[in-house]
Image 1 (cartoon, rainbow, N blue to C red):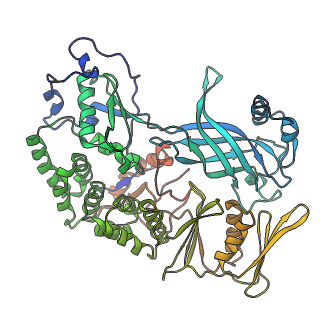
Image 2 (image 1 turned 90 degrees about the vertical axis):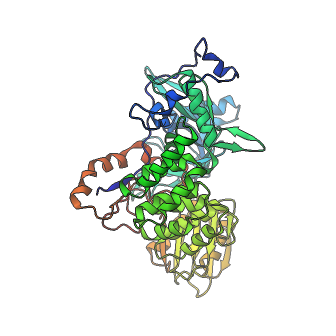
Image 3 (image 1 turned 60 degrees about the horizontal axis):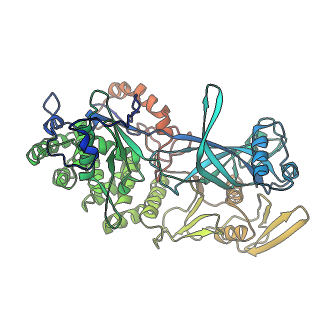
Length: 599
């Protein structure tokens, strides 16, 4: 037996330019709305070896790489740590934009110690939709006169795709808008201790996509033809469609070599899986051919080495593949049960919730995929119940992963009691008999979750949070002060309950970076009586050691696994509920399960 590496699904970019020129003659009618009675379907039905032709035999996925976007903007509200850099590119770009908008006293504004011109960098992932958010990095110029971005807020800035063309910078239209409070790279950094950690930061979910990025199916050069493009688009649309009052096609053939492909809503959070399912679709087959193939795939599903490929093809078949997949739930092998259960979940079948929950709790390598699958079973009460049980699992990443899955199903679920605190970040309190945990995010979206509603800080203590000073010297009472340059601006007196302290900081104008700084300091000084977990999420790209495999067989995949972990795609997982810990192992790292690297 061999080990498996659960990396992002392999994607390929076509090496040819798609032509928009239609073929003349008898086939050109396919793109003019005429009927296609004489299509040679049989040419698409089987490969030379006699097996059913799949879309992967004819086409590759295009437009599937992240797009880097850049921009320049103005940071304000810095506590005297800003300054102008007149020789830098950010300064020149921001000044030019301010002048074009006829903003008075532009140079004077840029010279203030409360402002700084910065560069902004982000990546737009494949398959994003209009309105989706993504993180952006904010950076001061090298050798900047500004000392720190802590406490600063980026004013709305435009992000464009920028490329070099023969040494000349070529800019595109605006792809996204970015704004928001900045979280410096090192919340504990000072001007004497790691000053570089103050000059670069992140705005979680700070950029908003202006338009969707559609995938493409690009026919291989030796396979391209008008009838092939048309039939493949029809095969996709027979399996998938979007409903919104009326059915809307997912795939549209544009030429003999190009098919535009939308993301089906069920796969919006897992674009790699969607791509794999699309590639597993049959180009064309008769009902009799499909029945024979399902029978063969059911047999292949029962054996771990062939189960994954069989499950994807059965999922691609659609509802007709459900009976065969259900047989996999009874298999003695946990790997087979896993493949069958996930595919059934995406087919909206009501049988796999128990298997998915048990596997999520027991097998770290499969956890992220099981929780994803439970999150798409939105009308299944058992899936909801199983996720609520996992909220109290001993594993913190399982617990928080279950929370994310429940939130994806229904953000108003009373079990996770969410609210947006001060318009700054998502805040949730969950009653749980398990060990209390405070969880915060440093990627994708600003969010704090308290697992345990009665967490109290250990007194006495004093904590800093940006311009805030939290004094807990009096038993049972905590004073939250907000300072400005002229002295104490305002204060609140609350109890030693963490919930009340967090709310007081936000009520006084505190931002998410301020709260994160306070929590990290509380944990470092042992004021927080429980674990502070940061981005403790189930991870993709783990290696599963198949039952009965040996060490020598595990080593065979070592180089392949290394390449997968380093791939650009795996570091930039598209719209995904679960983001792995950056550069480290999860809370469940043991033995044969290896965690991936991360951006």
